[in-house]
Length: 629
Image (cartoon, helix red, strand yellow):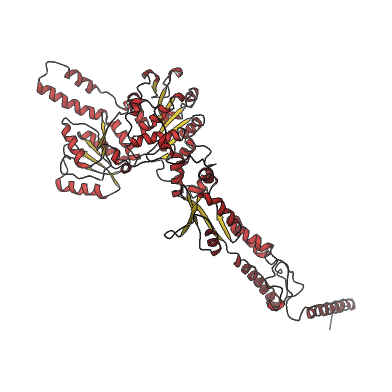
């Protein structure tokens, strides 16, 4: 027996009749639309995918354009023909622009809603298949040509064939074109978007290589007159060094001389400085161990500069008379600490020796150097290895010469450092477009020659005397005692010889620290060299320095047996990681072949110069010999 009241029964009956009327109205509408066929929709079906691709659009601008285009299209994918539309049942009450929400109901109704969602997403996904994008990248290949790297695309190929001067490289499978046709190519490719997108060259490339003056060529500087350079220095110059000075003048005294070690970067820098003598005072910044070598070279090559106008700073407390300064020499360590003093002297020319010391833009020395060069007319950088490992190390040096050339660091890093953004910030440790960077450097900033490039202009052997850092050489009591003894007239010949031998050994001990400093400099320049010495204390000191620096080396002295010497020589010759051979002057004077070395260092001289001549002649055919005094 029912427990419903008469009022409840009446309400239920009214709702049942209302539901029947609604169902009949829906059936009539359904029959008017063609029976079981779903109505053709003109509303955008791309809404669901445009939402799901939000994160993708943030990381891929090309995909973002595709999603935007697909979202804005009216999805009449079936050409308005109802017969081509997919046959499926679709309740008119379902929303037309978005998938129906999950509602309560029977299992069949929920399954139909799920199937509808899948069908709509499939249609939207397939709608972007015809919008496949081909991306091309422009890169400089020579100072007068550029290439486009991209996958095969017939439409792009048709455009490429219309460009005058086009060339196809079958090895790299790239098309390259004259730079004079760059704007024409980019303009024609604009009409191929969005299916084809060509990434252009950076603006600094366009400005320098396309819009530059006609006289800014790599060969135009060779006719520059440098007769105003001091005659003493000019008479020392080899032909390739004359070209180096002319190159610096062609760049208005703002350049990087990156010649191989031993080719005379110092004399070329002083030649450029002499050409701009009217802009002096001259500031020379170098490693601490090279200050007195620079002093020696300035006095020898520029004798017109009075000695009392040349200052060498040893410590931050040294006093200089600002009105007398013509040449000031200091180390990189003092550069950051003496910024205030340096700003008071109106320098016009600066030479930065071993400029790779400025590779870190965050260091105090780099910040001080960049602040100084902003107001200087001439900036000459010297380095045989401008970038020791990656392109990011070049940026500070390039900014010192041309502050506004690359725009900003981010543009440079994206182009040449393969900059990528990670969870910890930007990673600039990579490299990209390195061939293009080399072209930019050689055209705008740098001149670089290797030994094999200028071998015919050089003498068979180049000998150079290195002035060691006097701050690290202390005259011991023993040396003073030996000196006093040797001045006595009562000594016999054998006694003098004995005292002289002891004196000779003491000189090696006293200059050992300075010798090791110079050895460290050679290690940083990544050169493969031989180091000769006579006394065991000197050989031990050099060996300890190499061990401390983690450098692989061989050592041959009187204790090494003959068969072991052959093995060590073969190791030095064949192993590229074995960079140094520490050799005794007497023990290694016969039977050794070490031709893979690039230079020879004599940490000590010997009584008989014939030993030195035989060693240098037998070991390598062309050497740059360094003798320590």
